[in-house]
Length: 307
Length: 69
Image (cartoon, rainbow over all chains, first blue to last red; front, side, top):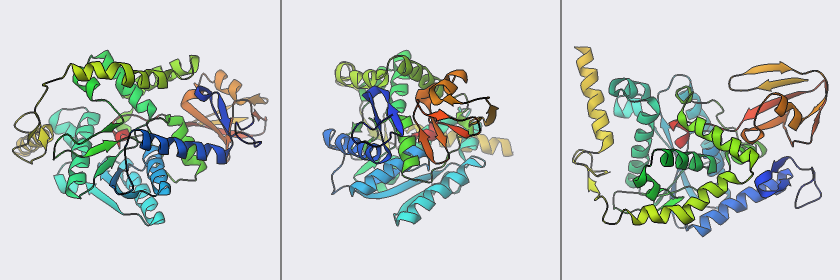
């Protein structure tokens, strides 16, 4: 296979673009895609202080790499989840990347700072681990961005993540979530950070190829708690569609943003009022935020079990 | 040829040479979900893998909440 843009030999095919690229042209293509996404969705400016959520995996490190190369002011944020052998390796990878490039990294250990690892939180609150993990991450990312004076929080979500989330929200008719989906969410409350997803136009396969071709030392293990996760099932279904009909994921997600989301957003007029949690001050629609309620339940259960 | 597949890790011996697209089809692996690598080299679907060579099938898909960051 030949590269679409030069006489070189291709190293990756991208059927949804009816194209194949050599190493250098693929890297250029990916970085331009991210740059265009940032510009078209007004995600970032060079004046922003950007907090980059970094798990140590291929997507988050690809995001950090591209933002670094594009000249943005970035600080990494890593959450130590306390999951067996997985978390120490993930932390090591994130720290090694930061050290290699002389970039600042904030690491928050949930067990040290908030008393419970993610497996313990799941056990004490009877949530599935991914639920306890997701709620903790959203809370800690927003809080860290605000307390650190960062103007934007950037995450490494890609097209596969977005399409799988959209499929899940549609299958369960999660109408409030459908109205809120998008690659750039402005801060609608003083206690909410602006969040952006600059990799939203890239598939997971493309971020993997970029990480490999750039020689990024990423954490390759799958989280043990993700085995059998619904999100993986949805991604598999969507990739079956993609194989039969190249461009299906892109058409599904970006078609929704253009033609579907406005209707769900309009249906929310006069919607929920955001308040500040009486316990921690973060945003919530109830008196106490979901994170504080989860932590309170974990503390009470742990205390009862120790008696 | 030897094919190393990650997650869960397993090794498959396939006699003879094949193109990447054919070996993925035989292994019932969706090419949209993986990259095929020979050493440090990414392989396109038309690439021929010889009998004596080893390739690795690297999964691109990760999930769960750990993937949210």
